[in-house]
Image (cartoon, rainbow over all chains, first blue to last red; front, side, top):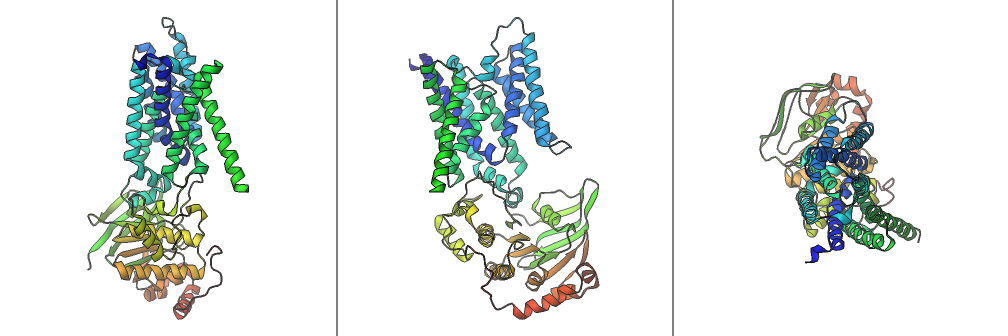
Length: 265
Length: 245
């Protein structure tokens, strides 16, 4: 069967993650939540440590800790600390405790690098089911709340006048972000997840006239990068997660160059 | 016709220790144009936010007519430069409208043919008119404007308020405005509320303009301006219009 080929599984995992991350990444860019994404992702390593200690699926542990992290940050924001200070404290503490926690697990031989930078070539069929299931949940959530999210992003009062609760929409985004983090751990790892959220969206911006166009182009860019990165890492024998991010970074540079030239012309 | 769209009873709002609004009894009926005036920090915007549901009352009640449709025009809308937004797409937020309905709304708002432009490419005057067009597409029972003409020059603001009076006449919606442009706004209002943490006085524009509390807050000068505006309000100057128009 076709899924027996590890390259096919890896490609499907990459494309699935790209599909979930890109539209959500647009909101992360529009709402300036990049650091929020980073914090959620870093916290997930603590989830990985807990999962391994308790013999739970890594996906579940990462999801729970990412959710807790996102919720705590949302609640604490505006209570004395600036958002970025709070995120900085929590993200790096969670990452450090996670790394220390993993070092205590002497009976488990794990390669922590696989969770920091992803290990897409080791994706199993079960992983693939989790990735595509998670991606479907995120896409459905974002599509369902699209208009409300967009209105709340423009202006909270404008949203309230139309009967939309901005707090609830924020929660939807937080939830979706936690799922994407949990899904993407295996593919690009916690340190590079934010790249897959932000860079495709930023690459799409100069070529978009509507929010929908930007989300669509970002999805295309993300999928192309996932596939291209996988091919490149196979040919060059480089780590796959970082290679995928390198490809999307190059696309971003091209996009910036092209839009810069167009503006000057 | 005298049915209340929104009514507050003893509305009190605190931000932490600071008392912003105290014991405000407010109501607006169908088809009424009400203007709230008051100095900076008098709680005007807080009252609007409370009516929209953005801040909860510390005491008192806010009652809205069931199924009330509100059209809201913010003071200004800052679009993040990373968010692409064409005028037509903006008009369809949060509920999609047909291309034709969007075109008609832009015609009526006095900014025809701007549908394909980016919101960020509009001039200040065009931007406010597009905001108004979007609010009207909601077919509101109540139109709420928060200093919506603050960024416009005098002829621009005059035209904006004439447009709002026309909208009321056409659709019968109630209009609630907050404004600094006292002389322009007041003459278009059925009722003026002078707010300074609590309601200082309210009534017809002429009555409020003569009231001692109002004069104490705003000085004598505005009363003269009110008279001046009424005298000149039917002619239109073309100088000083927005450069992009």
